[in-house]
Length: 250
Image (cartoon, rainbow, N blue to C red; front, side):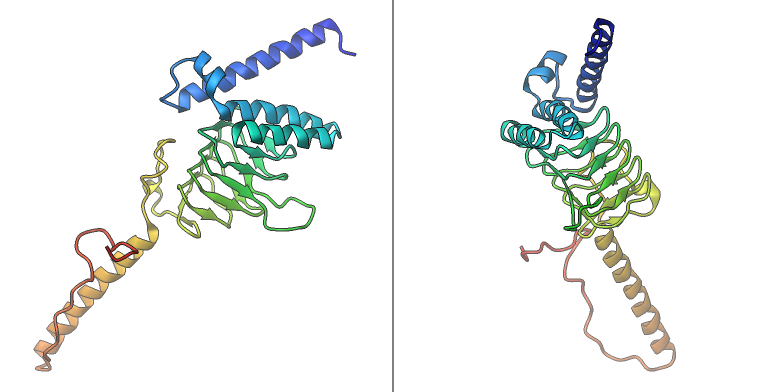
């Protein structure tokens, strides 16, 4: 049994942790107006606190109790965190609906997760099969990070991306499957700017189209100098402007 001084120390540590969590939300959500508002109506924060209790039960070998509390957490907040998952300090879950974090997943300190994020497994073996996310990582809305992969510190995962390979520290990945955005200065630094992302596939197609057009002009000039000019129908890209055509053809 804990002595009164130990109880007081634990209460003080808990109060500091609660204040730290509330401060992290205030720092990352411009819609948050006060600490009281965050305390009362932020489901991501409630899910994080309930998970800490469930995780303590899980580590204490009270597996069923931990799962029941985790289930109640999901019912109350819409956020599904397995009690075996390890979450660091100052983790912010923004909105949170639809977030799934698997049993062997790890989320580092200072991470920011938006709604619909999945940290899922790709194996039926009882081993580490979920993502290991480093500190200060931002994962955009509805992104899926799958398998026992590592997401490096300060990395950014764009909204809607599907990550199936390791992400280097400080890299930005986008797309399905996710690819590292290059050059490095193209990464987005603002934590909330997880939707304004470059599209590496579109950029590559555009670069290839421009290169092809330059080669066509060079070949045409060479044919003209050699007296081999031929009549050829003019070539036009199937779209105008900087954007590729819509997938539905509209």
